[in-house]
Amino acid sequence: MKKWMIGSGTLMFAATMLVACGDTEEEAPAEPTDTETEAEDEEAAEDDGEDEPVAASEGESFDIGVVQYADHPSLDAATEGFKDALAESGLDITYDDQNPNGDMNVLQTIADTFVGNEVDLIFANATPAAQIMTTSTSEIPILFTSVTDPEGAQLVDTLEAPGGNVTGTMDLHPDAISQTVELMSEQFDIESFGMVYNAGEQNSEYQVSIAQETADELGLSVETATVQTSADVQSATESLIGSIDAIYIVTDNEVVSGLDAVIGVAERESLPLFVGELDSVAAGGLAGFGFSYYDIGYKTGEMAADVLVNGADPSTLSVEFPPELELVFNEGAAERMGLDWDEEWEAIADNVINE
Image (tube, rainbow, N blue to C red; front, side, top):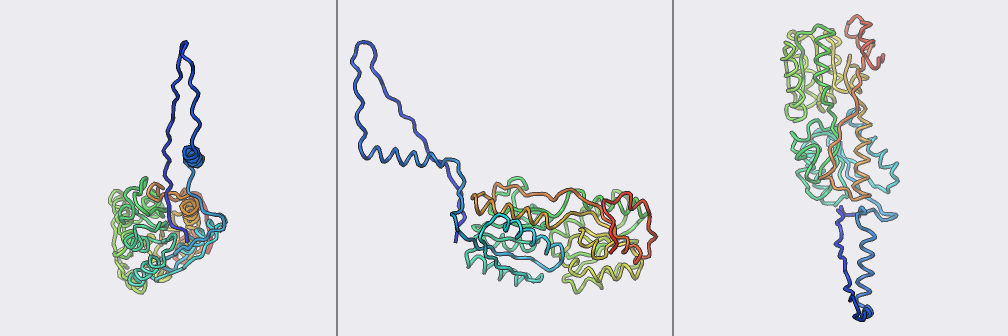
């Protein structure tokens, strides 16, 4: 099992010889002793490897603990991308795959097991998973993905210089939420929308605050309902009916896990449903700005390979943002929600599906 190593530079020394001048006879240099020769050989060997990263030995294997906070398509895609990147790197890896299904007590047990087994690296998929892993070890490298606000979640010091044993990829494009609220206002004449989220998830609180700020700027009102588990999603959504013109679901793990319940309410009440990622559009949301979670997982896998193979230091590996946003509409969802299809939606969309 390989331990995480950070390479250090070697010290170099230069020697000079004093030569007599004028008519003084030049003195022959003394022959080096065996001890001096050995020291010079060792120094030359060190110099040959200067600035080279600490590489994995040929045939070396690694143990990686994988923890995915919950089951839903976006997180599944991120985990798949992570493993595909490492498979393409050619590394010999054994995975310990764990999923607490949103149970924080089980999540802590998983973290303790990874630390006790001295895994070489931890892949934490979603904010709660990354938070528990981070508080459980300061030694094992942790690579996260599907995290909305790494600084606010106290995973890193800054996005540019994480500063500890933790880094990874974000699942929030800076413009995604504000553009979604603007879309609701400009294309649908919505005056009030509802948001359902888990107040126990820091990433969700952060996203709701951005939506609220944008809504205030546009003169829209926001009604919220909170849940603790995915079993609460339907009743929380139904509690908003009568006071809203639309529903907006951000990348909240509990709510996305129970998204079918939200879709059912939206279709029954003829309310447009806007979502925070593309898998939720395909699942039955009307529209959303998003990107491929597979891609951010894949990028995290590339970062993990850099740590394992080259000895890259997570403290200096900047947190990566997701790729460019894509606006996708679901024409089938529009029909089920009782909306007349507007050709302008197709004109502004990057893609239109019919699911």
